Length: 105
Image (cartoon, rainbow, N blue to C red; front, side, top):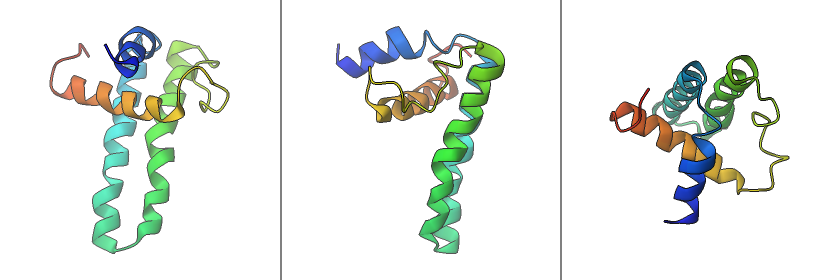
């Protein structure tokens, strides 16, 4: 198993057990994906700056309110155990698996 998949199944999903926290993560992923067509429609690449805040803030709120693990839900700047982009990719993978019913919502 690759290092990323091991991280995803053993660490990332473990840190996202509360279903309301997951819902907020899904909302952030789907909302941030709406930024791309809006950027293309208005031909304005600066709209892409909204991608990361829209992607991450609902999930951080979920960690703060539902998981009650602020240390896990930080901005990932302080986490040095895994690359920062793995969290973004894992968040997208979790949302995709929930959408395709491969992951229990």
